[in-house]
Length: 155
Image (cartoon, rainbow, N blue to C red; front, top):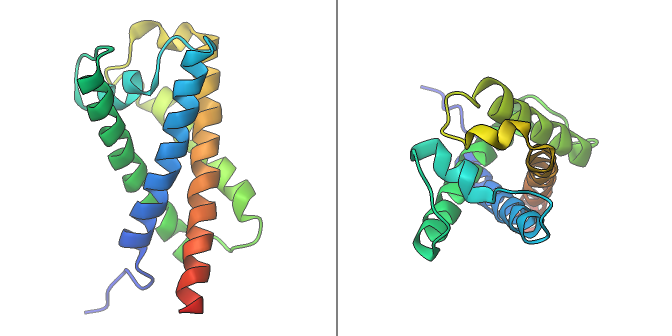
């Protein structure tokens, strides 16, 4: 039986997505620190699996790991997209567009399903910082995929 995975998309995609998630997380934390956004990344990362979150070190660590898991999941999807759908040309632009798509999915379609704070939808700073962070996520993830593909070819 033929296998769908041909280019180690699961491993490489999850690593690249995790790297992108760390960059996204750092940007969201910075946006909150600079008072550009009311909520940090935990408000959304923890909202996917929990009904509540707090500003404590334990919740921050758990939220960070959940963000990495979510980033790894989307990284695998992005790796498959680049293996079977997209060409490599303009890959950074495509990564930014994928980030925008994830943002629309998260804060459009799924915002009522996830346990996000109710006022996050009315906070322009939060919505815009999430948009920028997901664009960063997409760009960093596809850039990481590009680097890993290069390293894989060189070996």
